[in-house]
Length: 370
Length: 136
Image (cartoon, rainbow over all chains, first blue to last red; front, side):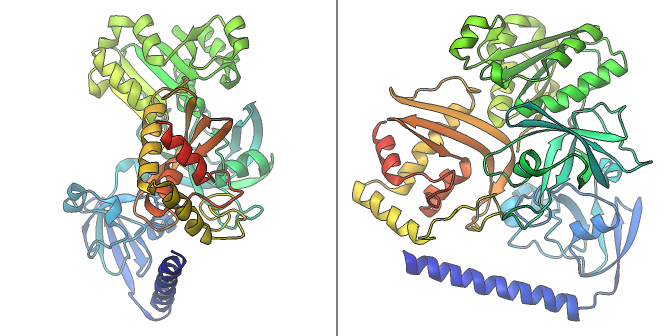
């Protein structure tokens, strides 16, 4: 086994060395000259020096295509459509592309080299994404292992986002961590609070960025932050809303509630929040404030694994969210809309239950942790 | 594999054996007559069943208690295997010890026979997993 691993390691190392040599040689000797990047069939046009990767070239021009890994080719999040000039699909892209996507010209932009004129398609929302060096104005522990950060944008700068969208935070080097990484977190503040960005971050065991945030980041520190990303947002209807979240999935729902408060939106809304026990609950005072200030809002936390103490003192709901919704909303589910944020288990489990209760698929909106 | 690349502590942690640990762990499984694929499949099934319960107590067989906490984000396999894996922790309490696993650590057990470096958070001893799989 050791010899096999050594052989695999040696082949990988040789491959890596050749890849580095090719990259260096490309930078030193290959002259692709100026290339033109056509975006959305002539809607925009850029001129750039050829030879760079598409994701980085666009980023240098202020166009921020979402990427969870920062362009290392390990997340597949930076996909976009290349209509012309992208060259053949590379083996490094194949794992991230379905057959349909490949036939539609979808490419992993951090892997595509801009060697010649190229024509691409980008969703309009991406042009609104900006990047800043933000300053940490406050850091508050919401419960053990969960913090809320408030980042001040540079003076005069503002972010225009929809409640439900997310930002990307770039971590700094610390301890043995020598790489900066990008991680996505939902914005928890109000869209009207546009000179700052608030994020709720839970510490993930072994997580590079969340450990930096929870254990090393201090008020006054600065960091790279970009946004807004994503299409999770409130619809423009007056349907009853069923809001569902667990853990830091509360963040985009909180932003939506701030928006409803700011705009005096009278929609009926119930927020079902799943936690194991009362120790996992947070922002209870704020939710009470929303109950008082919004026209028809109710916060319903439910415990799935109450402690013995909870069983004595807790007067709220106990059980999985699906059962509580069936009990409290009943047949109204058929006419309502649902907004969910949390892990795949919560989102998939609740979506299946809502559909079984008669909610059409196109009225279920979600931001799944991934 | 190194610290700070994919994870804060790296997958090998401070294990002085390095990747030789894979060979030692493989012998333990071979002696028990269980394949890494069988172990990985059993763990994957536990993950799938527990994650939809949102923290509710899950006892697939008497004496085994499983809990899944999902986290935001995905992580790639450090062995260069295609695909990305959800972040999260599955805790399995069994016979007085608690095993910590993630979708990626389950994949690495099944596909690469890698049980983590000793000292790492996601290190699981193959003997414990053999016992667990036999409990089903």
